Length: 306
View 1: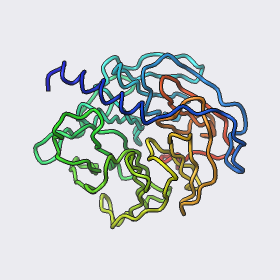
View 2 (view 1 turned 90 degrees about the horizontal axis):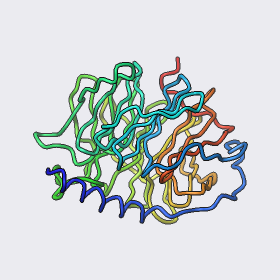
View 3 (view 1 turned 120 degrees about the horizontal axis):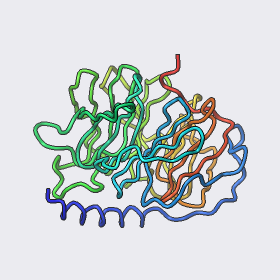
């Protein structure tokens, strides 16, 4: 794909994404047992479109600014730096068990970064001989396998894969297509015990859950939660299995059974979020051109905690 065509596609797709995300105002009461327990603070601003926050377990937070093709690092002292100037339009980020930063690159790759050396290696770049559409978000299981969503946002047209899908990249490097019947599968997360895979479409109000039958194998999907309007972008999870969904109304907190506990409203519509900070009780949310943080009563799940 020519660079000029990619930039045109990038601009057009982001106009659509931004139109889907409507600004909200802060004012809702804290959710009992969840939070926030204090002020929602704007930590940084001035970006183009922030996404993919990921905490490394050492007090540092990494997040992507998709249009600028950068990944930023916010250290434990609040100092902001640029981790890479060429992220290949990285979106979702997550640290794996050995401390590599795994990234969904919307130019068609799933990659892993050595944070110390800044060496980048490609984990997967296509399925059945064709590039992925535009990998968006991911979750890594305790076996080292990676579930990731591949919707149409910023993808070449016609879609390289012909449809929007969810894939699994095993620790051995094998890629399997798991889901191909959802429009714009976006946020994706595993339950704390990894027996359920949740997939959150952007272009649907029905949020989906799949039983994990074996490594990289899932059963039929079911709707476990239906939103009043719109879909979901990014998602994170706490130690009790409650799900935190970024939506046009704010952060909707939902139980594993699909009960809405409440909504955390932000000054700008959030795109993604993660827990970090001491004891993973700080919730970070990327929202348009900003990064927000809020102290929480709930504790974020640390999948690598022993």
